[in-house]
Length: 252
Ligand code: NI
Image (tube, rainbow, N blue to C red):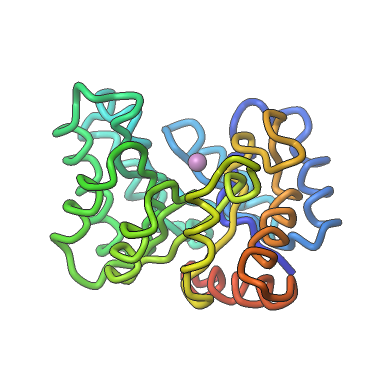
């Protein structure tokens, strides 16, 4: 059994065919999926889906790329949603200095609000980091006893060790399968089995040989297979550990 710890089947793109997509995943032994919200409407939709299907779980948060649009009152809704029993994580949240360099302080403030909520509700963080390794690390390292995952980790090997030292899990996605992606493959080799998670980030980042196509949770299997090859371990071993890790971290 596999768990896709990060999918956006709550995005509009999947409104018409999400049922087919989850059936295809179940047929590939992807037996649980975390539907990750990133703004008001996808947070709401994630919960709707999780209420409808046992094997779907929701997470809610505000993505750093919309940091400047978030008002204090938006957190009232988020707090209500975080109390829901099928909401198993806070995020995605984090820092993105690739798309937005002009509001770094606003992003950091928003990220800290999510970290505080993670502690208050005792639910792990789902952390997005793009072109912001240092700021993400510096922000997180102000806290103790963090719980969470670096989602679709795209940083360096050195920084991966530093995030592991903060007690965080590291989740790998499609990029480990890309032919020209050297760093994600090196990162896959060093993540201890008890800190590794897998995800699709669908509809984005479809693994090889579907790169550039719309991604879906069934393809998390291709990611697990590639990691098994890179770590020189059996697929069964990767599947067993990543499933146990996701179950533990998100209390599924
Ligand atoms: Ni995402």
